[in-house]
Image (tube, rainbow, N blue to C red; front, side):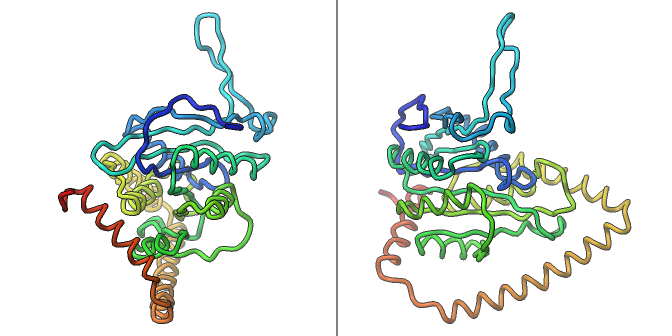
Length: 304
């Protein structure tokens, strides 16, 4: 396949792709950190990588050279790599794509990914993203996103993921989601908001929120205990810093009040939309029931 080098040919069952890209889409590195947590915990194996030659300006994203042996040097190029995980206890397997936002030929880049999905039987694509916003670190991480088709969008709303109506400049995540929708792949975009006054990277709280949403959306089996401990440590460190700065304390309180007011407004708006929304079609209802039963079987709630 053009632009993609494959290294393995596993038999994947109903696989889903989880993708995260460093750069504009990755505030506090929450998205790429979340993807790497999955790769590490699953001990996922490398499946393929995208050849960077056509997609990067190497004078801007310079390759790194390192010593690989006694008299050898190795060049590490900007990477976008696929890893796979076979879930022997579930009904689907997973592919994780993690790398860097390309600088060139975004349509060719996303066409390569959607073509790879078709070749590997991937029918669902979930992208992870992080966005800087005026939000406090003291409240739960706000999640927003969009899904297609409509049954997936409704599931996201039931999980408390706010539907985004953003219009404006976008990154490779937005372009990839649009490309997946055109190719009739089920696609979801999950975004976590990161406080603009926290520059620490990676932010484990943002990563944890994304993985919790991903776990519920795709029934991903992932142990988040270590990440939860890291989040608690991160919260303590941030609290100590804020406690020493009275001006920052006032600013955080203002953000808390603003966030609560916005949440009340969102709930009112969502209730109005629910009253006005047409009923789902019979085909969409059947699809949701089938998905529910599939989850029950994978969790042992039903016998095959």
